[in-house]
Image 1 (spheres, rainbow, N blue to C red):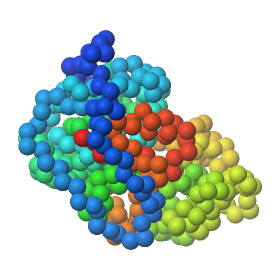
Image 2: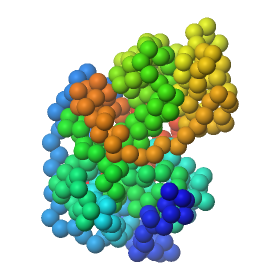
Image 3: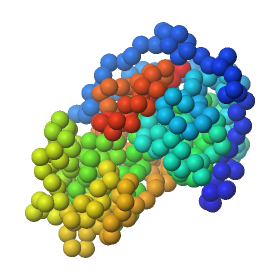
Length: 372
């Protein structure tokens, strides 16, 4: 899809002004009844039954609560609004009542205007990852019906015309091909943590030609993508050996995810180790060092930063079929969602959540839940 086509196909109109502050709600007073959930255990030892969470929508309103920004900048541009139009549903889309969402680095880079030339029109409701319940279906939707619990990354191309109505709102409209049924053993917060990160992890491994018997080094193994690369490499792709880097505090987490070698980057330079790898998955932006850690004929896949040959960089394409393929691994507990223990952050805490993820110190994913 071309950039212009992506922009035209995902741009909708918002009906709220940014010139007045009369409609800006103080999220603390608006949602004073919310309570913060207890810190989540990072890794589950086995599949569990999710906590019961009923979502009942009797009538779809015309307006919804959402976080928005009308200009690019710091977290200060984020405003809470209570009169945002519920997005229109196209014939190939479903309308999802959002129960949980998650933040990714692309969310704050987009807000900062890093790819403004290919972004959708401002103002923007941010958010890529979603988990929720289908409340309306387009005329050509075949796989989902009202009441289905779903999850997914709502933007097919992360940097090319991402939707103006994102997932950090009560409702979001998304093409059915980008969604999958929510794994039955996961709650909404856990499911929301997965889509963009697990699709990025999977697509990157596929693009390297990763196959059983190969070895891999994962840089930033405790991050949202890295923690899933470790698990997918071992459980799905049949890696013979998995190494990963993190700070001292996260070494045990790496081992619990399946890393055979946990490297403390504060004490060791991974590029100087005698052991070399078939693939290095660079999820932190150290490609120049990463190419020194591969075997002859090896390859480096990079998500950010400058690329040094034979490294390459890619941007994930959202695909519900990938989530469907991975659902059995999630439902069996072989692959587990990793949520940062500081969360989930409640809907009124979105600014705090953005500030936290921008420190680059999050473990796994930063989740927003509940969304009213």
